[in-house]
Image (tube, rainbow, N blue to C red; front, side, top):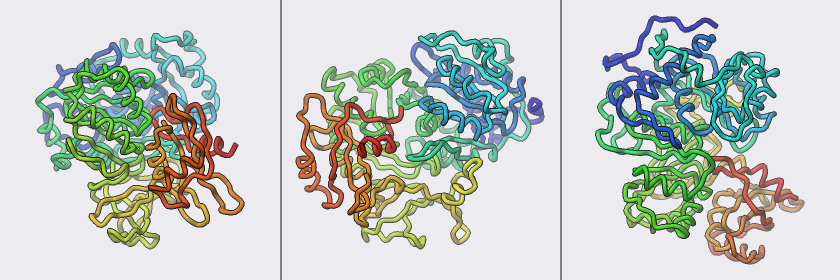
Length: 556
């Protein structure tokens, strides 16, 4: 494909030309705060101007090898400045960056590469052999840029990769000038691939304007001022004080990518966690970088942080004024521990998905007690709980319904018309996305999230939502981590089973002991009937439970 046409240039300081295109917004903000530090990752620190320079150089290199409007470019990377350079470079060219889960095995990679029709991929040296393994099955793939990490990865023979080049050399030899691309605007595409709870990875296709409002909070990362009314208002919201966001999860996951971008668009500094999750490193980074706010993904991150504080703390974290959770439930017992260590922090929870964007939140001020792990008193406009006939669930009725979201929603799943038809619905002229999350509505209007219907357990005709049972089990002192699944049962159809990692030093509880603990909080049919103790719970790098693994383990 030829390089992009040159007829629409960067907006520069002309605010009225701004659109909700993510490249437009980034360029306008980076022009205003070029000297500010933008990103810290490991030993590397770059300003807004330096990040813009790298993104321009990468964009010009990609354009020189034929990457253009609508082409998909894989980002097969751990956290690093290169990840953000790749995102921004693609946005500039109206190309589409594709997040690649670095935990995927060969078959999942082959599917994603083929499904996306990748034209190019930016990969770390440690992943280059996997790219070479699947490349012959991906006829669209013509170019690979390899990022040298300086780690233990073996030297890469670039000749084994289609159009293989060294990433750093490609940037050095490319122009730092902004590429000029015709037609950049609100309708350009933003795609996030998700594995979901089951099935092969699938791409969720957003318009950039919808992604800006649905995923990036419309210029309101703290949910204090409401979404902007015009693109130019983003420049008025650039913060004029020191503010640092610490991204703990990998950028390959939607939530980390969204929050990092929303803070960069606000003129803040973003710290990316480098390497495996290490709670002691996290606390020391918060101390050293004077972090303002950070986001964990459920108990898989939060509980080790609490343990590290008990063992190595206290830490000097006076800079931290907000502590957020999203992507997985955070047990009330864990939240209470953290609130004890961070008495001056605001604690927030959020929920959403790759298909819906950010749908709801709850906020606890210092001194308030947590009311539950999945109760949200604030939901996005267009979000409601509906029954099977699309009637809104009456508050306080106890009826379990599905979460439906309208307004800023994706266009479709990429290359998946049947799945698109299952998830996206038009009712009375309004287009909704139904992610599969089940919920009830309290008498006060708060949404009580129960969990994803696809992993619910049907036992004797009763529905059991694993996250509710997991939250109760985590309050038992012997349970450090747990995943609850359904296993086949001749009489009841399915049986509730708990896969448990024990608290270090704890005596293994009996199934009867755990059942008695649960009966004080749960209906009898929700109580686990089977217990499997394991050395470790398998989760994604972002902390989400692997329910497929748990089901196999519990059935063994």
